[in-house]
Picture 1 (cartoon, rainbow, N blue to C red):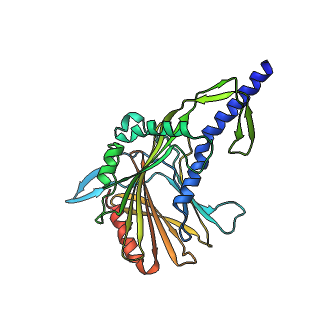
Picture 2: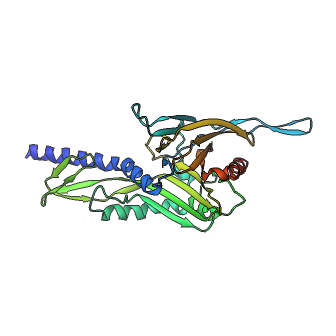
Picture 3: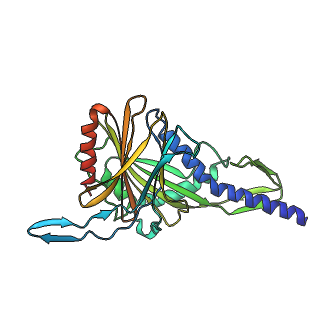
Length: 317
């Protein structure tokens, strides 16, 4: 009997660990589905930002100057793997703890945890093509989306063009409490491929913690230029490594630089042309625990228009 209880506990622990680790795999799957375009790098949504000191305003000879604010992150480029000669990769990351206390997020987005809880309870499979803790909600305007999040320190860039689509995306992770009762055996396959068997009937009632939130605005033009502006944040419950990662194929290489605009130093990431003729450019900025990202996707004839949008975005902070 004691041996049977030990086996139950081992199975239970493995099951709980597996459930806790599903988020990263599901996140990659969601990202792949959302970014599956042959001419566009796959971007992995990671969430963080770096708190910055207030900009010092000086008056010198009647001119207003600003102390330069650094983005505070690091942008690395290279290959996806050490032996990879084809797929280029980048990673933008910070080292500080930039997680936001839930008490500072005052919008209705926090109510999603109850909906996520019911979705987790109804899922028969531990691992499926739809992650119960991921939600995407459309909004009419950026202001509506900001109000839904309710983080006062979010400074989403207001551009001259009205976005075609606005979304709030949220990710929640369950905290499982599982009871095993004598009865029907519970068995299945973990995401790692390991088969498990639990003697007894499993009952679970998870609590769900909101771990990350992102506001996204998509813009489409009559030319080839399309661009997306995002603001991402992590909560105190986010245990994942900070970072935004991306991979490109078709022999594409990444180059990066710092560009100073509006008293700030922005990271700019350029991709060499895809075989299909598409180009991409990204800009990163961090402020008040929020990371801001602009992704531009266009063909060479619209390079000047892309540069104009990038400058407008930088100067909107």
